[in-house]
Image (cartoon, rainbow, N blue to C red):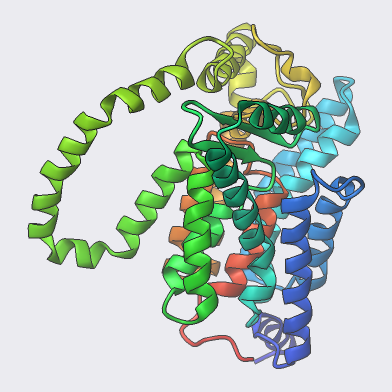
Length: 393
């Protein structure tokens, strides 16, 4: 074996220095803390991305999966040059370019046996806080207090806190993005430690308190995947549950229909805004068919819609659509193929399931193709590496 191959194998082999693993655990804990708390603590917002990128650079190893980055690197570079020639803000173009590359490079960190409680405790804290707020407002039954809390959340750009019935309050704030990740990690690891059992409980409560429909769908899919063999054996139980679920659907159909109506009713509703974004992108593609294939260029601002001026923001509800608008269908296809290759090479079966489910949780939310995805990917590479033997301590 020549020296270059030996060096590559050594770089991919998990280090046997416990203090390094503890340091990475602490660094990732700070990253998840920044992601969950930066909107409430002034001055932390500008530290989130640099901190995540610093961890990535310091823990990056050599891997053949890095070669898969070359086509995307060439395509992205051409897109940045095109944006610069078109007179767009180069800083914005580089920002999106770096984020796209970092989401791929995150697969190439050297896997180590990190402390899951240290790395994920801030996410568990987020679950506890939003659950306490949701339950507290529901118990108080005070519209004045609830209105004050909602006004504070909106004015400070933390998110929104609302209720349709005055009992069940949905706390949809910045920092909830990693709750599905905590739920799925603890679901797959629940038999290992007390942290996973407690984490599964608080993350389930956090999902309910967040009240995000996509989160509920992803949680249901995660449960079905995790216990698919048990579900296949318990066909009789499923047969009995179907009528029960049908009766429950009939009983609660009125409340469910009201929630759906409010979510979709009006162009300024939750789904109305997302449909407005799709319509704005469609109109832009109709005016410039070539941009549908090749994109408008990295850093290009999203076209304004009928309800909002999306060009004023770097993040919108359909962030995946925004990135597709910049790099086109060709660029997004290239990106997804690169991600799929890295997922297959760097994560085991459990890690792959969690990764794609997390991506699904962010498909209608601005929680993917950003720092959340970078940190999530690094965590999964450490927790569910693609190897036949567990990482050395």
